[in-house]
Every structure is written in C-alpha cells, then in structure tokens.
Length: 313
Ligand SMILES: [Zn+2]
Image: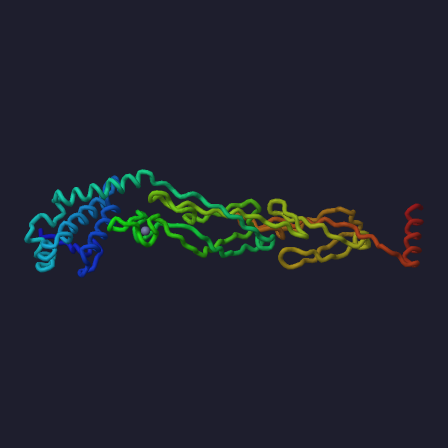
C-alpha cells in the first residue's frame, strides 16, 4: 500500500499564503463543525475532524509548516510515517485547545432549537383564486452570521464585526408565493425555512401564509361551486328564451325554458371553481329572479288585462 498523503491547506480550505490568524480561524470553524459531540454517529464527520486536527497540528506550528511546505505532502507523509494516515496523534497542546473550543460549542448546540414560525396574511380576489396567481413578497428576517458561523465571536475572541456579536444578521429577501388555482379562504401555504432564525445553531422556522379570499360582488362560493343571482325579464321566464350569464371565465348563454318559476335554479356544470386537489371544477348555480316592468304603456296595460281575463275564464 502506498503512502497516503494529505493536502493540509485543502483540508483547512485556506490559501498557501494564509497567515497564522487565517489558519487558526479556519481550524476553529471546521473543528466546531465536525466535532464528534456535534455529529454523533457520523463517521464522515469524525474523519473530517481528525483530518482538520492533523492539518492544524502541522500548519499551526511555524516550524512544522515550514518543513511541510519544503517537502510537499507526499514526502512529508513519508517522513512522518503512519502519522499522516489519519491515526490518532493528537498533541496535548492542540487537544487542550480543542477542548476549550468544544466545550463552549457544545454548550451552545445543546440548546439548539428551531426558529419560530412566522405568519403572514395574504388577501386575494376570487378571480385570483379561480385562475391561480403568483405574488412576490419582500420579507425581512434574521439568519445565522456566515462570518462567525453564528458564534458571535471573531477568532480573536472579540465580538464578530459582521454581526456585532449577536451571531445573527438581518436580510431582506423577495420570495415568490404561488397560489394554486382553487385556493380557498382559510387555506395555509407553507414556505419552509423562511421563518425566524434558529436558536443556538438550530434550523430556521417556517413561514405560513394565511389566505383570505375577498367577497365578490356577483358570485358567492360554496366549496367549489359558485352561486349567482341573475335578474331575468318576466317575459323570458314566461315564454322561454336565452340569457347571458357572467362567469369567472367567459360569459355563457343559458336557455330558459318557458314558464320558469321565479327563484328557480339552473346548474351549469364545471363553470365553478377549480378543485384544489383534483382535476375538474365545481358547478355554477344560477338562480333566476323575475324582473317586473316598472312602468307600463297603455298598450301593455291592455294586454295584461286581456291575460287576466283569459286566466279567470
Ligand atoms: Zn458574526
């Protein structure tokens, strides 16, 4: 088996020209991330943790680093034998340093919890609920400071300049909310991980939109059916005919049979609201209301009188 060698700069994710401070900062950040106490039962994290430890033992020591740079990774690995194969070789100094870092890190992670859920109202017209729509919201929130990984402290121990020590930074983000066709009053739409910032390294909460569908001047909604009251001239109800019916799409013409009673309902199939979780649509229920003439000419009056005479025969 050939000698396995490791690029310590790559492991720490730093440039070859990185100074001591940068190397130490990278080490602390990665060591915190891969520490076994934070990643129980995760062998990959454990391997990374050992690599990070090993890389820092060399790059964090000016004399060892100089030799490593001079020899190159392969020759370095040969020169130190099995040490570079990832076998435990923690120097006591480094180990103590770890412990102080991790005790603090663990104390924080132990109380990690998900951020709170946020709620926001969203009001839509019935037309928008019918056709579906997309809204863009500008939301403000707080998220983990990337610079200090939420710790609030710079590697020097001083408050992190990016978040002033709070571990959180404010952001404004536009998010698109898709309202599905058929959305109902009272529906909730969940946008995962756009809620409050996690506490002590926990995940972000969720954002919920509460949908309110505005009342419509013409249509009432009953589940996925739409109801409309339609005024129809009394002559049409008596003699039969056709009327225009508004819908949320294109208007349709509807046949009215002769001698239709006032208040009679007609069901127009599939002209209602789209079903939210299935194909198809509800119906449009049209209730007809007689419109009586407000004024009558002499001739109309005479004709009505004739009708009355006929009816009483
Ligand atoms: Zn910060």
